[in-house]
Image (cartoon, rainbow, N blue to C red; front, side, top):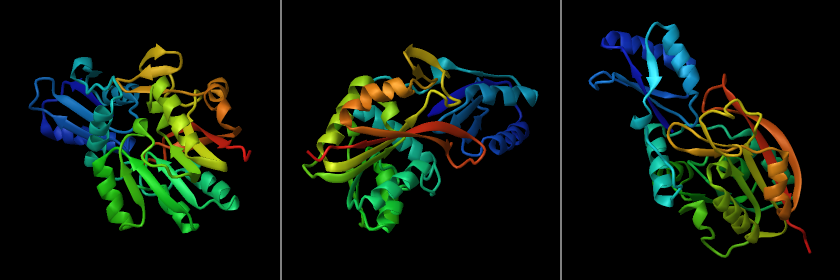
Length: 292
């Protein structure tokens, strides 16, 4: 995600000083100034951006700051091409934007998959693979689906061909007719629109063996970023870049996952990027396909 702010900073030394102050406050944000631009712009990139906090911090340091809506990178249609461009830009600017440690949801999913003796695992939204190693360390075979060619190149450097990564969008599943023992997906589903979420869940469930598990982690309505941006539908907010985020509660989880063997939900706090100071509330959703 990218946001553009207008400032009144004209001196490079002041811009550098402010940039360092912001980076200390927002360790997982990529922050740059362009003083040659007529708006003396501040450019911020991150998975999630707390615009109000950015503005508050800059104002406290004695400078003006406001978002320029018509200068933002918009993403409205959720097409495969648009999503690929967005994620390629993200991974090009910050190769390991979420660090190398697995998400908490991956740790919990690994425990479930291991105790259930699952072997073949599908990870839609593979990214650069930070969650895959955990499953592989426990003897599981992992296949990933990833839309960003940049992320795939990073993952291939780390895994040296030990993981099959399919290049494509989850909105275009299935890519093969393989039946998997388990499916793990962290932090992706809520970026899709209603129809895309339904199609993805159907596709995943159709590729899950009887007795197998699906494990999704999604943003919760209790998360600190709920309500940020423009509400375009119930519990769906469009941020400054035009990215639409859907937030789940118990009712929407039951509605969307009830038909897929919903078994359990677990509340999780996940770090925002590599920062240990900021976090978002997620819900891990566990589904099991009936044996018969």
